[in-house]
Length: 150
Image 1: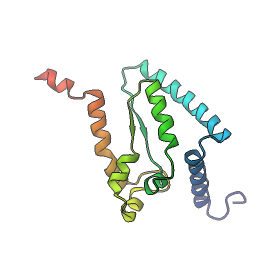
Image 2: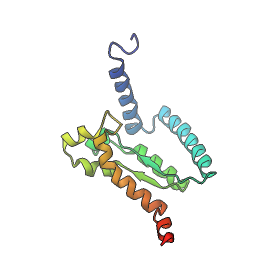
Image 3: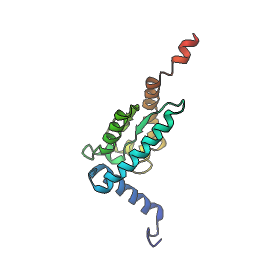
Image 4: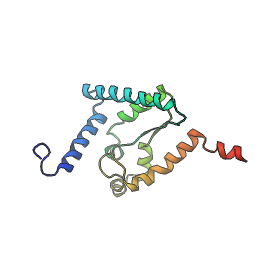
């Protein structure tokens, strides 16, 4: 309580929002660069490990609420993940345009779409799910089994 105050959850969310904003708006900050290096190294390890199995892999970029409501907010995380996906031949889906279309600039729909600054609500998931489903279907040819059965 000394560190976070009376409302620990609220303080934790505010710290998370501040960190997310820094990741998006200050991508060249030395701490952010270092964090991305560690994250991408770990992600590469996951990709390498998954590729040793018979498992399909897909990389998704979920938007931050600020990115959806403000076109000038920035897209550094999506750009970083897109480059990683290209470099490592991983199917990649950026969900920022999907959420922008799904909320249509309507403040109420935007507020209903997020539980907090960076996590979609059930309503937000309803916006994202059809696009994710279609991307999976197209990326992994899920109809192959059905076609060969005919």
